[in-house]
Length: 385
Ligand code: ATP
Image 1: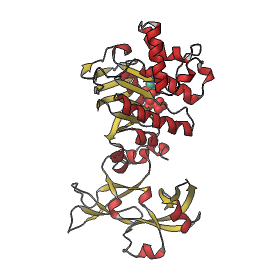
Image 2: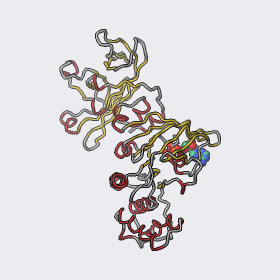
Image 3: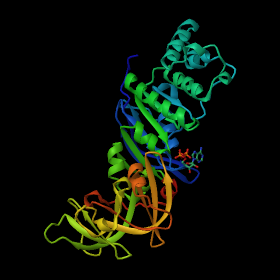
């Protein structure tokens, strides 16, 4: 199925205003041809509006949308070379699966034999050829989802737009469909733009993640960069897996300007590398450390620098959740901040802690990231796992 045109998507200074609400606020974004881009962010941040504007179901208040270098801002959906798959599948209940898949070709005047042949091929592609003559109600949710996918792809789009495509599926089917989307992307060589508020879905599928908040882009990058090097407390909290720590610069290492000591409100001191950035004593600062880089320390380890876990925090165990391959341990620090450690299960059960225990946790200073952005939204707090 050769792709006729480039699926590069560009949004240039796009604003979308609804009755006084700026759903999308002066957005500039380039999604490369053939890439898999996930738009993530809490509910209401403007993800679906962006997707609908790319599809042509909504028009920008100001700004331009380009696809494959062509200005498509005022074009109707069928003129754009895009296809959109909705969260609720939107299959026609009275039409057989084959006719559901062939529907867009019928609308375009393709002869019955030709459109049914093509629909049959698309159904084979999603492993549903044997169910072509059933009605949607006779299919499982996962099967209906794959029919919706086949129906979106039948017009040979250069850009496939997916709005929360997996959210109606149970965990098992979600993981299965995730794998199938990845396979499809590899075989089709078209651009995928996928809206989700599920962070692990974005990390698993995307080669580019766009983290949004209140109509604005907060960070764009590769999944591994977004996860390991979040720009702001907001991104660190929204993407999950990180602890955010607040403090001020206590000292800059006189022998190494790249290294600072940070003092937290509690008086606790932490060391961090700052790279090219320069700080001075008293500057407020936000740090993050991955939950899985932190260790619960024995008394000996807490007092010795030899183990390398010299950035430390103490707290009372407020939560223990077994997650299979790891155990999530939540510490209450000074009754204010919560700090989370994801300990490998074998490590935890070798030396378990109990609710109410007072423990010290530590990590190597080089695992400490300095956050540069200011955004620290409460909506992200709610969304973090
Ligand atoms: P969710 O994850 O809940 O689907 P979202 O990030 O996709 O949210 P949008 O659906 O793009 O968010 O909505 C962004 C903002 O624009 C919200 O405040 C929403 O209420 C508003 N909005 C969206 N569509 C319309 C509309 N047709 N009329 C008025 N306001 C709208």
